[in-house]
Length: 255
Image (cartoon, rainbow, N blue to C red; front, top):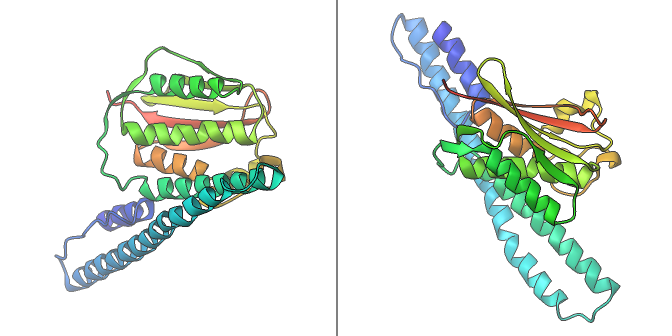
């Protein structure tokens, strides 16, 4: 019963990786284990089919968007052309974010020693160069076993979320925590997210009210949460010292 409970808990975390139960023991136990294995296979197949359909649709949208951008370039300079190009850019960003969400945890990227501090410093520097009030405040190095590209993608979404929907200053930091964890934080000074909406904000394709803006596909926080959970950690939302949103990613540090 404990093995079955553990397998059911794992299915709830990631149905794409079924845990096959041994079909031994009394006949009732064998039948229950076999039914559980069949259920896992059906769930995994359903999730895979829906994910592939979403990825294919998002990928195929890139071609007509490229044609729209090309045709817009032949329009005379003016407000109409600027609006069309802005709309196309927004749709391209939504498609890219959807593909990132589908790709998370499916690309087979191995976990390697990664300097998380360097990633956050780079993201802060890039955002600052783009004219945003973003800075990193933390240790010079913080090496953890991470999927490097997935980590950069997840924290880039958190920084973009803070810049797009929050207000400067945006501060990135890293701190040691109990239980052998390292916590990376992204804090802004914007309107924040009400406590009652924080759990829902982490779900995919969820866009909150106008106070956080309605631009994008609503996947930035969901991508970051997927990365955190796949790394054995968690993403939590709270209130920053400046009154805005605080996104905290707790990651385990082995040893």
